[in-house]
Length: 459
Image (tube, rainbow, N blue to C red; front, side):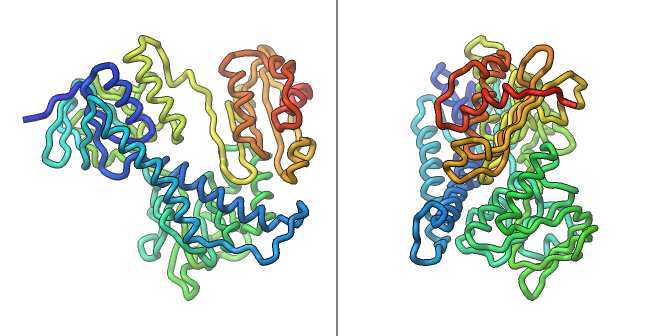
């Protein structure tokens, strides 16, 4: 006999626990299911642990630059990776335990541990327990992809998840993949003391970004001693006397690179392949992402998909916004949609990249008349004072409506500064709103009005 609930939530990533809390506070009886660690990717192998590692790497980097600031360090800077890992584990563990306690203590919420599979559109099995509900919310997240490249099963390889268990400095880390995850790990481990080589199949790093952005990021990384190999059309792996050899078949220089360890950073895939979607009649695309509408409903009435598994975003903030959309529509009688949100994210290298809205390439493809402005961080007083002048700011504006179309801020605190423009974009206010604002000096944000005063036609 099945246990009955008003709602079943599968997964405890960013969307699941918050939705469980809202539904339970509305008097609904909720079952929430977790097969692994509470908190999902962000808490366990993503945002929190990786940014904690990045903070340690930044501390080491800044210590090595001490003399530039008039600070003398007697001995060479070294990194205790075991202590770095302990710090990371403590911070991530605290967040994980907080989520688990939150759900365990929540009124009207029952926690089930195990792998959930659909039995029908309104029934789920967890181990030997059968649950049923009129509403089921899928929040199963994703995991790193392991591509079927030659030799991948013959050589020990790390992913962004298994990398969380590393407590030593690899002598030479080869990173396959030149996008967001790969670049963060590349700079991080270079600062920890590893030799690092990035191997990227395409002609440039992070191809979705504008060329001026990727070129600047390329320069930032190479200036720190990171080697970058592009146009690696046929990547192969094999064991080597040094540890591993990665075959490149590149159009440039050597056709292979030898190192001690390999990190695969070639994207992620949704955790939907063993969920029994077929038994529920829920449609997924060829990559396994659950198909949803603008309110995150699947093709089956009473079933929603939130977070990384729906292909509508691959970030903690998009997953949390998914929860907000569903809760608003179900509980608040407030019509909210996925299409309402503006693309926004950050790349957490140092300096970080903050992005909002359209890229320059997307604006050009749209065919609209636009204005553009750029400003190097060397002309930002706060950046000069901090001795961190790499990068630049760029903003794009619709020439007719005066609305901000998009922006990229690659520079110190760029991940924070971008929100000034993002909020104006959500308000649908003209760019002159920022131009006329009085910002605090000395900050990076104070240069946004100056940036927007220098708009020129995009040619």
